[in-house]
Structures are given as C-alpha cells and as structure tokens.
Image 1 (cartoon, rainbow, N blue to C red):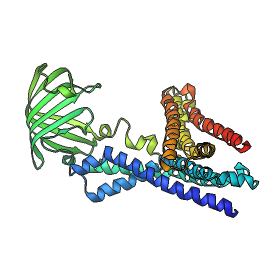
Image 2: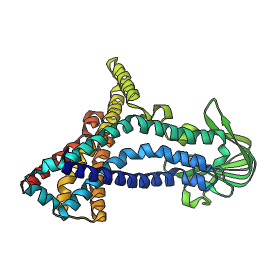
Image 3: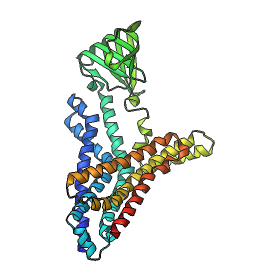
Image 4: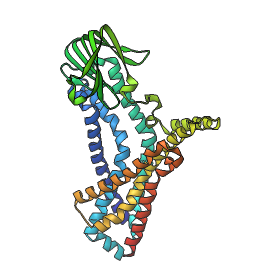
Length: 380
C-alpha cells in the first residue's frame, strides 16, 4: 500500500469510527429512552443495572450503525477530496478512480466481516442477555413496576392504577382490561391487591380482594371514566395471571429468531426442513422465515460494501466538504435502503414469494447503481 492509499485508508477509517460512534450513541439513546430510562426514572433500576443494559444495547445497534457510519465516512472523505480538487489531482497523475477507491473497499470488507460476527453472535447474545436481565428484574421483584397514583401500562392488555402502596400490599386498586384495539372491555376495582410470582407458570399473579367488576362497551383509553358500563360481579378474591412471555411479546424468548446465533438458526432450519420432508404443511413457511432471518443478517453485513460503492461517486459529485450536508445525504440513502429491506421482510407471511432472496435486492440495486456511477465518474 503506497502513501496515497494509506492516506485515504486512514481518513476513511477514522471518519468511519467517529461516524459509527455517533450513530451508536443516537441509537442506544433512542432504545434506552424507549425501554429503560422510564424504569430508571421510576426508581425501578439501579444505576449499575442501567449502565449494564446500556452496554448490552451496543452490539445490537452496531449492526445498524456500521453501514450508516461507513456511508457517512465515505461521503465525508470523498466530498472533501473532491471539494479541495484532490481527486482531480490524483486523476491527473494517472490514477483511475478504481485505484483511488481501493482503500475504501478494504475498510468496507473489514466492516463486513465485523458485522457478520456481530449479527450472528454478539448481537443475539447481547439481546438475549438484555431481555433476560429485564425479565429477571420483573421476576425477582414485580413490585418494582408498581408506582402509586400512576397509570401503569407496562403489562400488555392491561392498565393498572394503585392509590396507595404499603410494602407488598396495595389499596384502592383499579385495573382495566383491554381488547385487541386497546379499548376497555372489563373494569375491576378492589379494596386491596397483592403481586406474587408463579415460578412454575413463569407468570406474575395479581390477586385482588374485596372488589367488583364491570363490563364496558367500546371505551377508549382516553375516556376511562365513560359511564357506559354494566356491573357483572362482586368478588372476595380474584386472581389474574400475567405471563412474562406476554410482557416481552408473543414469542417465547428462547425461540426468538432475532436472539439466535447462526449455528442455532441453521439447526432450526434443518429441523424445519426435516418436518417439511415428512409432510408437515406449516414447516415450509417456518423454514422460509428462518432462512429470511439468516439471509437478512448476511445482507445487512454486505450492505456496508453496497453503500460504500454508491457513496464514492455520490461524494465526488456532491462536491461538498460540509459535514452536515454529507450526514444528511447518508441518512437519506440509508433510510431508503432499510425501507426496501423492511419491505422484503414483511413478505415473511408469503413464503412463496421467497423473502429470503428478496432481502438481497436492495444490496444488488445499490451496488449496481454504485458501480455504474463509479464507471461514469471515472470516465469524466
């Protein structure tokens, strides 16, 4: 590698590291605001556990930050080189644009290898540990999620309100059960209530004492005091089970594809294929869903290469040295790329359309367009 290549390699690598760091910060902050900042503000998390959860988010968001960072870095570096006429000087010295761009593709290759490792090992392991940490927090002390005189919406399908809390016992307990459209279907009110954990069922058990229940018809969440209700029962004791699997979504944690490593995904795919060969009608759809997850992981990693290919000619054509302009262009390109990837993954419910292959279409489109623009730019 000659002096010029080392200069471009170093410039792109440093810019990529800084850009990835910026996007990691933004994405971690966004996920933290959504998932754990509320728990910390409500006194449900210690500072140590909060920092641990933030650290566990990093591998998960790095998979998205790497393509964004590489795209931004190439736009910044080649935009600056073009604005300062350095690209023109290099081409005047007899260097083709392909030779000038060679260090970029070396950095992109390094990023792709790293992203594959993150997508298929570090990110699934970190996400699994992240979910397990929050789940254990809820299991060990479900009362951490209960704050008095506050509407509690942490439990899917329910809204809880506790007037007073004294240790494990709560008084003036209200609970609204919601239907699939988030409308109130049942309203319960009890003098007191208690939370316990059922280890065998892996569920939080809410036991209400001395209360009444009403069935409400089509009451929206923003109109909980609607008088349209029909009293249905009085009770001395009533238990409601809140499975932790529902708290974390519909799929159980150990079966989540996004938290499975490459080896686990291949094993699941082979098992689904064996059932498909045995005549299981639903196995084909399951196999395609698993293959889509595998191909998506590889496609996201190779998107670094595709986005770098299109960023080189665009950076030269944009001819801008301003960081904010290149950053805006990078975000616009990345959003369009991710939009097409999401469109492909939406087709998981239609396995005959082969969404496992369609996730590669954005890569092929961006890479083809990038090399075409690179060819055109090299000629001028």
